[in-house]
Length: 341
Image (cartoon, rainbow, N blue to C red; front, side, top):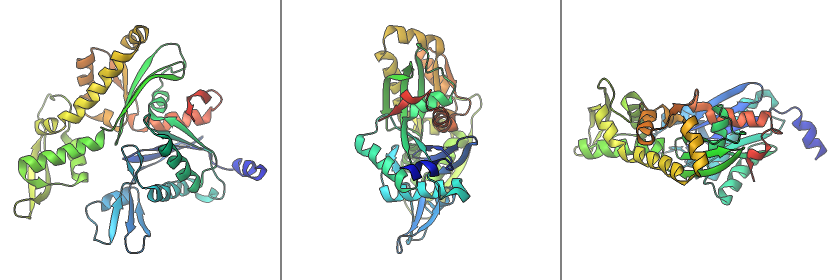
């Protein structure tokens, strides 16, 4: 125990946003130092890791049979324990560099709907990857802190964190969550909706990376001032040959209508279930959008139209959870009540 504490003095305390789509690591005193896709590529024959992060993501859909690119997290939680541990270990080692001998204290952002079994999987993965003390914080709470919301005040604030695998909606007051909901509909579901649309309308099969690129190029939640279009390519289902197609922003809005509707509905449910005093606070402070999905064109406008409330996108939505978890790590006495058991 004494040796562990002594070694801890030399370790870099860290916070991690262990996301379905991306993993971000915050180092105390340095800020966010790593932002990589949550993907691992392995050799099926040997079981050895081939690539991690951005390099592994580029392998997806392009590997020979002996190489497999895996996303070890699904819907915000661990789907493949061994690959998650391997990925965390790799990322921690990259960040710690010469200080790998010293085990860091680690704060990890997790979905609000996480089960006890899933919590244990996160903690064990982090421990086996080299972390010393692991603390968990719910992602919308971390996002609220990272977005600069006054969570300690006796006034309610509302955050909607749209990640890769989950959308987390929370209403927070006095450093506690008054209402929370996690739905497993977010950026990945939008990508899958685009894949299904292209297959149905054009009889062309496109990959996940291609669908994601289309989403960011021309995707939107409401009609834009000027029409947009982009080209993508895939495999013609009928004759099996490569085929290039042109898609419009109107088509992609139609393709993503259902997942976007689910996010809207989750927001409305939260507003319907809070006490009147909290509803009055939110009417004044508005709704804050965080996570990568918050960058979808017009999503803030769509939610504003539905709720008639002020809706703002956080200053750095992609890093909100990592920054908030890092802030909680940096001042654990102040934020001790936001950590979950």
